[in-house]
Image (tube, rainbow, N blue to C red; front, side, top):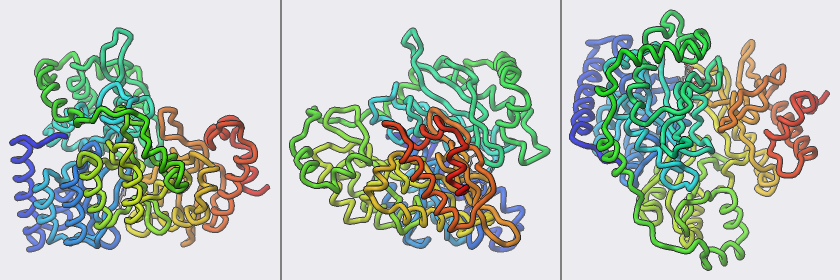
Length: 550
Ligand code: HEM
Ligand code: SF4
């Protein structure tokens, strides 16, 4: 795992001291809330409906056990005993007191963490594949590239005040678990016909009120050109991105208004003015960073494990959990374990301090002390021996972390909505809970198969409803909440924005409507078809008919 060097330590410590001073001046009334706002936003501190909200960066979703235990301590000491995993792999606290935030930042700094660039119009915390370094699918571990981008973008003086926020995600597998096509820049690490490793660069994806799927800017960017090329992209955006209209300020609008070919020509022209050698990093520096992500020392194991096989045969609940929550590891005899943060009775993505500590202890015992947070708002233990899976399952169950619903209808992405967010037009968490409740029968969930429901409490789309197989958007009219439905969205490598079905629904109508959609799909699906596949085959008309009961 990446370890801070002396520069990182200095930057983080000086930022804590600076912010302590800024908070003190705010508390004394020496600066107004308006003056304080840009300062707090440099440190991930938002002002929400009931309280401040602090968003802690988890670069590329990688955590060690010591860090998650510290996050648990912070949740207990300064918050209400829980945290929230976000769709960009960060951790949010919903109830910190302003006076405590400098101490929280110090406690984070003690375990090499911070809240830089988790808000504001800068390059945000870089996200990646939670299976990085563990999946056999990947061309290479994407985290050294993500770390390179983190170092390049952290307090980059030229890109600290962009027209709008800027999100970058990196993956190295064909299966996209990092939603690179809904990012301002998405990077897929690929190999060309000559066997060289480089970057497929996408630009202009994003959700919000204008959802757009990113398009290819460069099909193959040689490795050495990555930073100079991105620098050129950022310069073009910084210069031409619309600062006159907040809703048109993202790079996706610039790319759309300019056209991808002209945008690319502008980037190429900017690239010509740069001296790539000044920005590009040497092979030895790339190798130095990559060494921090060297794989742990896996034992030489057979992929067949008698203990695992016996438990799988003997215990149906263990077998169901294995079938849904375990992914294939690159090392024989190992597995990638998804821990669901989607139990019936909690908000999707919430994790209690006890669960954080348990996850840390289990990472120590079973996964080389490593954990990941996921875009899907769950946790991953990346490197678990198959023979340890039965014991791990038991331990997770004791902490209510063994729900076997990864990728199923209960694995909902949901934004905070009206329960926490000042911008919300409707509640979203209660909708997700009601859907989970309605489909709580595990056998039915498994029978339905892969299904991604995503819910946002307003048009800002933090809950990714545009790219849900079923997307739900909470709106309000004359004081009454209602819910608009989208179908056919997809956040994966076959990304698509869903289609609006028509007029919205009340809470109860919505649940019955989803029931009918699911029943219809199950009665018409062809062999091996997921909900999204049936929708693509049949189109909107029949689904709309059953949804509206016409
Ligand atoms: C609770 C306070 C929050 C506020 C005030 C807030 C505000 C916003 C706003 C205004 C946008 C639209 C910006 C744009 O498109 O330019 C947005 C987008 C987004 N937010 Fe939030 N958000 C909050 C919480 C969250 C949470 C908890 C998550 C993750 C679970 C999240 C994830 C996202 C994502 C993924 C997008 C859209 C992706 C994109 O940038 O295109 N937000 N948010
Ligand atoms: S989608 Fe709207 S309601 Fe939900 S968190 Fe974002 S801004 Fe708030």
